[in-house]
Length: 325
Image (cartoon, rainbow, N blue to C red; front, side, top):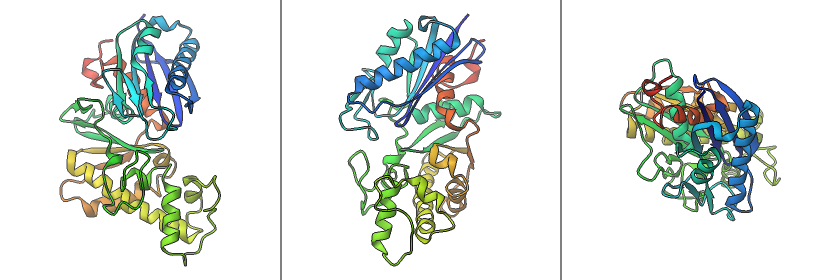
């Protein structure tokens, strides 16, 4: 029997799954992503989660033939590690992944991808049409894109293609991204950034009425969306988020000409009408070329995990034609 494993390492959540030779998931484990204090602590969390998934499947880790990883970046592909992740504590400077997993499963067939690249692999692998030109965009703790262009998954020479959240949407650079640079899309519209963006909007126009708990250290993006339709500042902020998101998505469309743009990530998945629907409405006014189908992934929070498994099964390409059962 052949077994495959997939790992999804996000800034908030950590997931692992095991599938048998026909792609049926037989074991799963889900944990919170360790917050350090070091990258090795995160690595140990990944290995623990993968062991738990193997235990749930009733197999030993050494029975895994190949594994795929969808992870936050950026990467040092030569070492198979994450370096200086923007959305984890500053004390985490390097997270070894490929080597420790190879040792755990006793196999060199370990494929490391940016999490959004794993997302587009998963979307393409499971799509009815298996489109050759599509983009998967996550709006979550951070923002990123996985791109399939002319049937090729774009990883980039260093594995860091698709970091569209770090493109500049505001040349004034009024907000600083978690990566340390100003004006990035992620600095305005990611789940981690939305509270500061809303506070900035309140400072710009103190006459806007609001009951949002702006001074509460536990104020989150979730509060903003929960107040939609009931709070003037929340409604204004959601409209402004739609503007910046549409700029970012239009830039992606003009860059890669996708037939389909699929959204995932907690912010998009939990607020489809307030985020994705509004992007769809605005993009059609901004794009000079063909407007793609804009949709939400059918795989919910598991899209990256599904892509990591598909990567293991298809030698990292997500192309079902290469999957020999």
